[in-house]
Length: 357
Image (cartoon, rainbow, N blue to C red; front, side, top):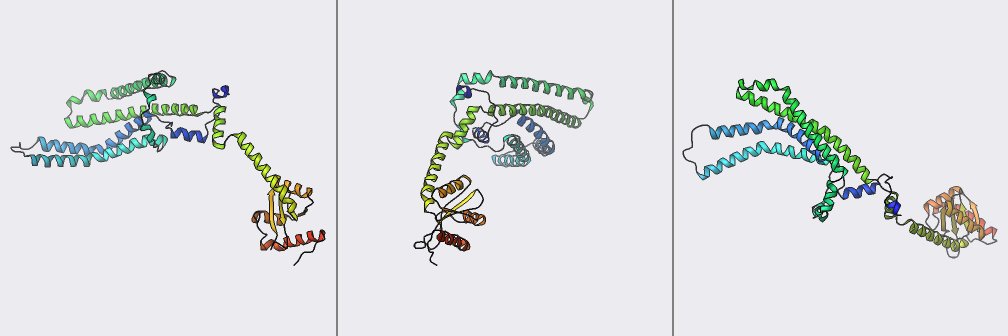
């Protein structure tokens, strides 16, 4: 037992184990991927929507810093000015903030979908344990993350240096350019440099996500003992289930041993269908199905019928119809009454009995 508990994880995770892990918050998640997607998406959003914010800020600066000097300015004037500036700023900034929020949600939910875990808000004393934190710090996973962090710093440095080195000639000649052209050029340089850095980080983030996915799959793998324990939880103890089935079989066999001797005839079809019928013309308005079964149960019905000398009649179509349409204890329906009555009549004739009606 101990060997199985601490054995190799040779089995893939079951759907139940994956669901339990998800409910516990154990999903594939890369913060680097979310940050890289947000960086690239944020730059694109600012490139397309940031112009409105910049124009608004320029207009506010021109209005407030240009023109005639204010000789008098009341609290009411200040309130109106503040409300006008805040309203205009909200109109210009809110679309950008809204798109950035959507990009942030998409970068996270795109990895693991919607996940609501209110239990994560509770205080976990395990996270405050120095021993547990030390184990997280000094681990193979931490070493991998440290290596990826150093590679990210190197990638950012090389990408930024390469972009600026490619623009060295234009940057050296900026002193002779007008201020608006300098500002426009610097914005373009910063944007494209940032976008290339974001692309490099995105490539590294995909590698980080692939590593985390592989690590997650390895953590979810199961030992033989874990698989057995899960089967017990899902289906119950196999020994108890086998004992339950044995008791049920014994109960069925006991019922058949007391029911089949009362039957007048057993109608069979192929080797896997048997229906036992009883009829007492003094007490019953129509023949009644008192037992039925397929395969092994049908064989048991035939065996009991032979033991107690109950007539067995082979009528394939009739047996199939009775098995599928009549429950135990129910009378034979009118559609099959004539065929069953003919069989009962023959049974009574063989026994030397008279059948009224």
